[in-house]
Length: 287
Image: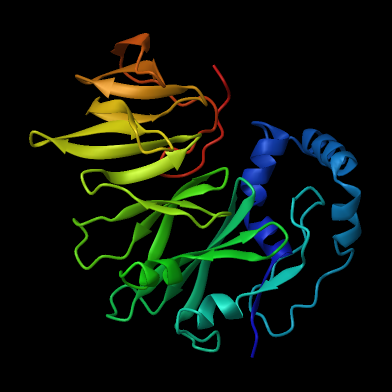
């Protein structure tokens, strides 16, 4: 029996994030929401409007049900089959241990999180399947991990343009293995094992590194050159052009050339451009 994940459902899952982006800080302001919804509907492409179902889609043969949100999402499909995502990894969609746990958009890609069995089981597996916004499968990270000689699990660590960082499934957690992967060209570059805890965002790859028994953070570019040395106690993007860096218990700002823009005199610097920070997406007003 085929099972499907609906593009409409996924948009519903993302309603809180999309509304935060479209409606600004005050989602409780009904009139503001209506105005933004009307504006977004005016800017939707003709193709997207033409393919947007006007009524509830048919949810027969699927357990994933959600109401239709307003017509401001980017998806041009009603539902996509995950049969290939399951069977290519040796699983079956009819197996009750197969779970879709999350679905979200990063850039121009739809990321679906899949688990098999529960986390305490020896059969446990967790991986991502990536689709374009037309509903076509672009990458199955379980397959990529297996092809590279690792286990069935495979997770992405952010997406920038067509690039993503893949974390492979290794028997020992401390032996992290990462690669830079191009979703269009399928080119894969393994990253030196001295770099760990990698995440890609806005054209840079933030990493952790053990330097003289001290764990420090730095950054690589997309050619895997070290542009920020591993000399900071913490490093994350504060904006598309600046890092929020921590040194000696104080925060400062540096640019992509490691030039200090704001001295290390601050107790805290909050991210102010909705940049992903290794946890949740948070939309914060610029200050």
